[in-house]
Length: 263
Image (tube, rainbow, N blue to C red; front, side, top):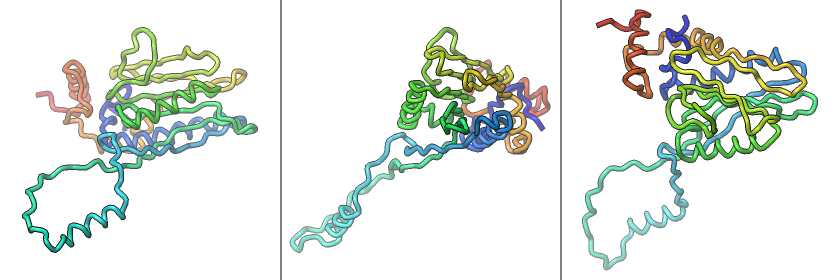
């Protein structure tokens, strides 16, 4: 079964759903591109590790020896110390360090092993302000300053898009295709909730034909094969939230598809 939406299904953006979609899309891109690129190019799934926390600030660890020393001091007060009752504490949360692994794709020339193109599918950690975004933007700048092409797929409405300059950049979703030979100019494919996901060419070496990535077909296949129609609750509002106009359009569409009551 395919999604009721003509393009990107906004219910797939839910923070609990998106990690699975991200993994499946990376795998689907690799699976669809590999036969088209061989024998000159290979496709490999690479993994990047992010160290972050929920509030984007790592808590500096205290060495164990210092903790043990403090505990011993508290448990063995000096002989002449006056016993006092501890103050009443309040409950707080401390930022726990999290390790997040995120996949991306590299297109390599088989003979030279050189990375020709990098394909990134953005996740909230890439877009949300904080350490994760800083880490991604640093890597992005290194690619943009190199001879490697960059394809950046952004299927998330939440948070600020990646930096770029030009007129009429606003859209719900976007695909950036940055060829090393034409920088700083790049091709931006924009689409909204009401639109099909944009198909785009995959940049390779200048003498080679560029295969077209049918992004919408990949999304449809992922939805069907993973059975997202059984996992998504279309009775609820999507997360992240929408504007009043967008929510009304979504509601009317789901009513037409028989996924919401009309009253």
